[in-house]
Amino acid sequence: MEKLDQGNKPASSLGVERPYSEPGIYLGTSSFTASGWEGNFYPAGMKPREFLSYYATQFSTVEVDSTFYGTPSASTVTGWYEKTPADFPFAVKIPQIITHEKVLLDCEAETDEFVTRMELLREKLGPMLLQFPHFDQYAFNSIAEFLPRLRFFLKRVQGMSSCRFAVEIRNKSWLDARFADVLREYNTALVLNDTSFVPRPWERKEQFDLVTADFSYVRWLGDRKGIEKQTKTWDKPIIDRQDDLRRWVELLRRLVSDKRIRRILAFANNHYAGHGPSTVKLFWDLWTKNK
Image (cartoon, rainbow, N blue to C red):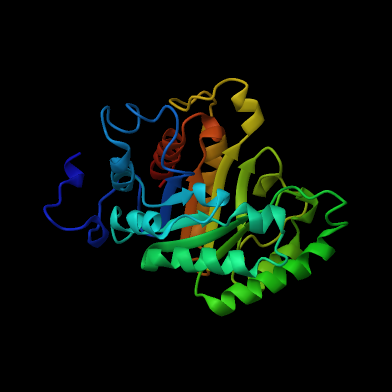
């Protein structure tokens, strides 16, 4: 708790030395609260309003999951800004009404409201994540039908804001060079996943250039349905991910050395191994061990 004691200075004006951080690599978790973290990741007795400030002393970024369910209030976003140090980027999920319900059509009002609200984060606003569901043939016969809609959306939002965007798709047959070329055209990151619904980058039959923007966005998601058969309390790792994370260390080392990339953001979900913070620590241990 000593790191939180910075006199009368607001957290938003401070820099923090974190245990799992180095220039260009931003590591964090998907959300900063979960069942099982109290008394485990967060010190026993800590009040929920103090969670984010403490979290930001350990990790250098967070992926906000709650925005997927709707645009938060201005006071909530301002609170995030005030509770975190100056060098702490927030990645935020774009609301599901845009990605799942309207699927980028006739969503200008919702998009404008969300982008404007997130801009309250000012210099701490990181990438906005377009997390799409798996689309069946009744939604789109092929990626050729989806790409014009994505192009229109990206062109519009980039014309109204300096925000960065990342795109996650769950139709594995859509992950090809053509899709990557469209993202590259708009400096939008292709999300690199470790999950049950698409192959990991090194497992794809068609290998193509993974760099589509001046940053990379990684999500360690795991098999949600599979792990929830074992637990729904996220207090400890229950799946050994050491070999998987070694492969990610290899991949991220290549990306770090790529001069097109200015920074990498990587987020661990509780469903990956059972405890998001422990996944970050394991990755960091492997990362620093192999230097």
